[in-house]
Image 1 (cartoon, rainbow, N blue to C red):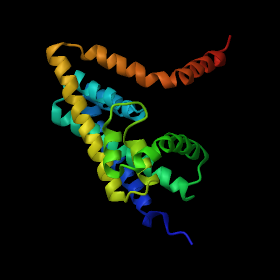
Image 2: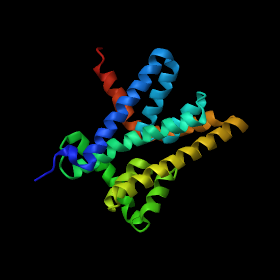
Image 3: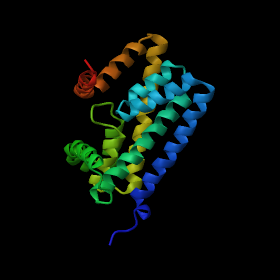
Length: 220
């Protein structure tokens, strides 16, 4: 007999994600009424992180004059929020608590990415997840890292400590790299533009199909 969803660790993590989302909406909503430009940057950074653009979100904050504490804290917050949903969604789908088709398909794609790295990470355990999440390489990051941690049976505490410490370290490194480029070479605009392009490349076909669909739906 299955336990009640909300008594599971994954159910509680999902609830935490909901609470973090409500707090984020309130935060952005506050700035939407007091400083619309800041609200736009906060929302764009959220969008960047949602599509796996950790560096893009950090670059946006720096380009718009956010200080180091706010930039690091806000981008870390976004990563934690996203992991709460993806990790809990993956585990709840795997254990058949959650049976929603589009979520299952999305989690299957994440599982494929994680499975490719699983055996390499298994030998290194905690430090492997930490380095994997910290590395600024394709298909790395806290979402896939936390799923690999689950696959190699790390405890929740060890998995999340490695995932979030790696994430925080990566954000701090990205911030100071961008800050260095901005202060000394004024190159951050070009670096940022390149990162945005790299993030968008996997979605170009979907964007193209979407635009084609819109053009076909227009009356002649």
